Length: 367
Image (tube, rainbow, N blue to C red):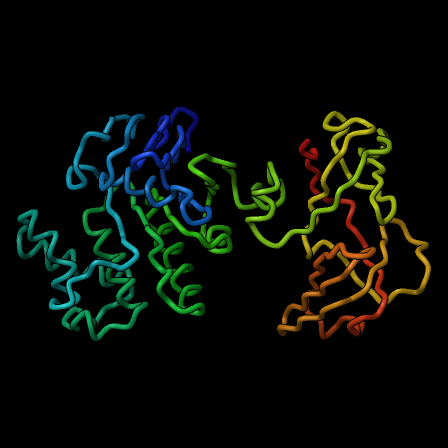
């Protein structure tokens, strides 16, 4: 995006309540042209309400919805240059695929020849050539999702809104359709707002993620920023598995941008910004399972950043093994082993050494 180009979609200080229940508390977001932005968060966080406000299906209490520099918050859905693909697809079961795609174009009184051409273009776009005369109820869930997606694209909207459109599909098909949505979105360079409760889906599909909780924005960033640099414990624990380890900054090593920290299970040396924390600061180490290494214990700890524990559970799933390790009396951490077939065999209830990476994220401990 050029430096002088304005965001395609701007939400300014959006508030929404249902009775006494405040659902959105001053939400402000910018979505750039051609960007796929995902709203993610637990049930009841306000993500679907926010999407419906953008599309005009729910009226907000205050704030502004701006599309290409024009305020559209007062307009009904049909007069906004947005289109929504609902969770239940909202297709007409008594019509064919082609008739479903043509319906909105007929309402807008398009020429019959133009309608036929546009329907054929849409079918090619979603790789459903040859299904034009198939009844909707004879299509699989994945095929129906493609039809719904194509129908939303019929008028080439400035913003495409996707309300958990693949949540009704089985796990394998969800992955396929997720990748298909991303392919089409990239190919068309269409500005897209996607809603999901699935953090892994958000990580896989998004340019930018907006994490919501209790009607507030907790963090906005790229998938890498959200995962590797969460701003609080909620973000860290919501997006992926995580281990939290309380610690205290003992000293700062200026020459190497590192710090020595004390934990209940021993001292660790970690990479840290010198200006961020001072000696004596109580912190929380955010440690992802895949950054830890595990091996049978040799009885004594002689290597830096190694803590000892007991392997309580070993969960094998082919390409990954999850190891539940207890440190001390009751502190459980999870260690991921990638491709466990090439790893040293481990047995449940045996003593193990867990190596903690220097590259961990650090949060200031809440009072």
